[in-house]
Image (cartoon, rainbow over all chains, first blue to last red; front, side, top):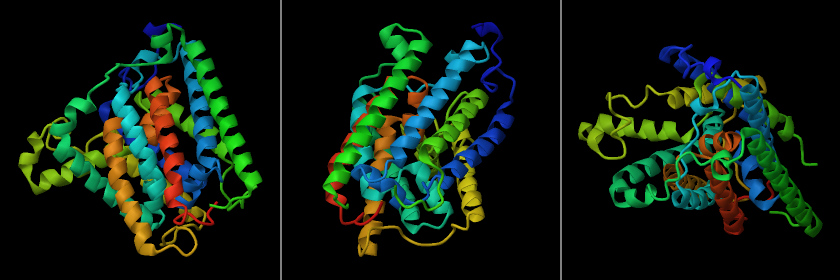
Length: 204
Length: 172
C-alpha cells in the first residue's frame, strides 16, 4: 500500500470541499434510509423479535454489513486507494461502553427501536417511532443537564483508537480475519439459540 | 421461514448496507450515524429557548458557531428520513399506526416507546453512538469498543426481553 498517493477518503484528502461533503451526506443518508426500509426496519415489530430469537433479521443484516464493509475497506487499503488512518474510528471508553450498551439493550427491547430505524419508522407513519424519538430528545436534554455530575465516569477508561491492529500488534488483514471469525461465530450462536427456541415451540 | 412481507433477505440486505457504508467511508471518512443528530437537534432547540445554554459543558462544542445543525450526521439523518419515505412510498407501505403485540394497550406501548427513547439517548451519549454510528461503523473498522458495546447491548436485550413479552406477543 502506498499511503502518500491514497485518494480516499475524498473529504479528508481534500478532494471534496466541506460543502460538497455535506451534500453527499444527504445522498448517503437516503441510501441508508432506503436500505433500512426495504429490509423491514421501519417497523418495531420487525426489530424486537431478535431479543426472543424469533426473527434473526437484525443480527443477520448487521453481521453481513460489517463483514462486507470491512472486506471492502481492507481491499481499498490493499490497492493503495484508501488511507486507513484518515478513517474515523470511535475512541473506546471501556466502562462507559459497557454501561451504555447495557442501557441501550434495555431501551431497545422496551421500545422496539434504535435511533436510525426510528427515523425510518417515523418517515413511514409509525406513531411509536415518533414517540420514541420524542423520548430520545428528552433523554438528550436529561444527559446535557446532568453531564457535570457524570462526566468523570463518561470519560473513564479512555483507550484511544482501540482496534485489533493496535491491541494485538497485527496487520489489517489479520484484523479482517478476526472480524469474520467473530461475525460467523455470532451468526452460528444466534442460529443455535433460534433452533432451541423453535424446538420448544414457544411464541413470544 | 417467517412470513415474507416483501422485505429484502437480511443477509443480502446486509451486503447492500455494507457497500453503502463503504461508500460513506470512502467519501466522508466516516460511517453512517443517527444518535448524534438527535443530540445536536436537542442542543439547538434548547439553545433557541435559552441562549445561555451554549456555554453548558457537554454542548459547548456543538454550539461553537451558534448552529449545531450544520453537521455531516445531521444532514445524513435528514437523508435517512427521505430515503425511508421514498422506499416506503414505492412499496405502498406508508400508513399511520402503532406496532405492538396482539391485544396490548396502546397507551402502554407508547409509554414504553417514550421511556425506551429516554434510556437510549443516555446510552448513546455514554457509548458515543448507537447501532449504526458505534456498532456498525466501529466493527467495520476493527474497533474493539464496537464489539464491547454490541455484546453488552444484545446481552442486556436478551436478559430484559422477559419483561416485555406481552408487548411483543405474537410478533415475528
